Length: 75
Image (tube, rainbow, N blue to C red; front, side):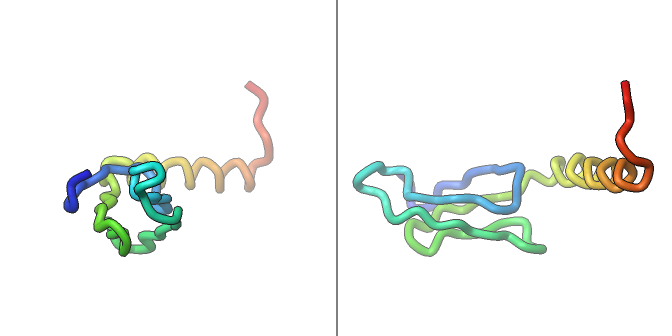
């Protein structure tokens, strides 16, 4: 594993275990919050949020809010 490995993700909460099996590190969860990336303090892996997903995630949130207001729909 490269010390500067970059992994693109489509969620803002990720788990990292170093990727080395028994040679990795304890599994930790990293939260990006408002940032678009987070770096693992153990192995320096960098997780980068795919910006194109932000539109889709926002779209899903608005659909979910609409469903809550309007109730379940039958299709």
